Length: 404
Image (cartoon, rainbow, N blue to C red; front, top):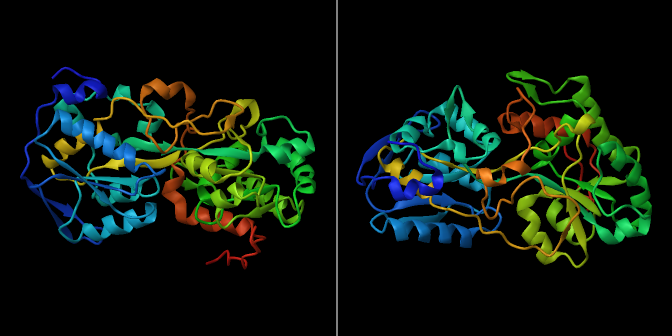
């Protein structure tokens, strides 16, 4: 079959056969069974409040393939709940055809053999993967095989309270470097009200993600392929930047809920996901701006990607119909948030999805040879948490144990 673009895939691919039964290895080695009869089951936690977008994608697919019904299943309220439910399904009989898993877990599931490498399916249906943004598709590659397709991708953005910026007389933009922000921080702290903070860093749930970009700008990294770099002097320097902003210079704190504490004015700036734009816009009662994250020397990349991707348990030919479902959206639907952007954001939001080449000019490559932050999520969150302990939190939460 001649290669086709993702947008033409639905029109040219033949209908997949339903009714197949296949096995799926569980995390602990037990076998899960997937029945191929019935509708395509699509598990999601609706990242970035994207339920309406997902239903629209399903409707588009159903109009073109009316004999292949799709059932959207709420698999949890967040990334972690979806992972727990999927892990449990692998030793049972409720394995989904399609599951949106966050980028923390794809590598673990790929090594365990419970999600499908997609090259054979790409070849079978003639899918032209060049229609995807190279750097996003490459996130899911291991040993020459891809284990997911990008869908609801995101990056952190720098959010800032314009009223506080105005009080200090700062330019209407985010900092261009972290060193510049370190100069701004004490000035901003003097301008906020008592009990508030110039900046909020994420707590241990997100810190390993939001710390990765600043770490790069200092020349640090979590790894060089399989070699961990947590004790590299440059990585330690980045961690000490975090710690000094809290304990030595006193303009930053750790937020228990970074989105809410920025939206309510407790912190005047924060790193939060693009997927938080809609919620923060709805909740904030002040004008705010967003900027790309600061870069390193010479404009070196300083912003990681995150979000979710389409994963398929190994259940051919059921997953051929599933892959068509993942390819059914032909154009993104973008909300218009009531914010000002001081420079073009370097990524689309988690909601709605936009991972096609049309937006590739806004993406930057991950520094070469570093495994995705997700591969080392657990050690990263513990080590970066240690830099900020004893924690000074925006709501006076007791300190974390860095060894916990």
